[in-house]
Length: 128
Image 1 (cartoon, rainbow, N blue to C red):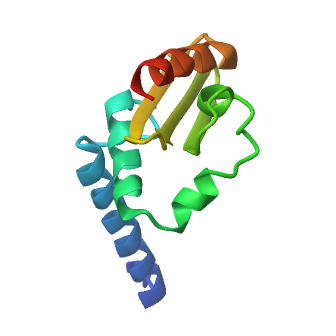
Image 2 (cartoon, one colour):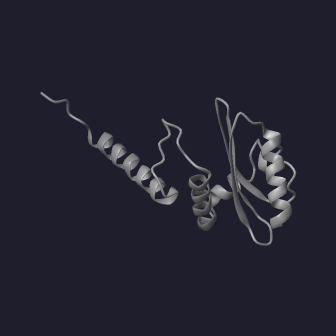
């Protein structure tokens, strides 16, 4: 006999599947977190959706404990960013609120936070 699955469990599973499908649609590709196969384009697409939504998450991403490093370190305008570290991977994706806001995604392997900051500074210098 098969075990009975409760209605709240089924609802939770359906919600997770819906969330995964939404992220896949926004990212433009299946986002497999277990295999760690994501691209800067995928992360940028998600950040673009956040920018277009312009909700409370922008405020949360603009006031993090990591504002003194990576993309936002030397940039003197509002930056809403999400960092990610795993093993030798160090990443940051951000909305930089210049007169013409732009999105930047920097994903690295075997690099450091200062390199991310330098890349962001160069891009900001051109696009500000």
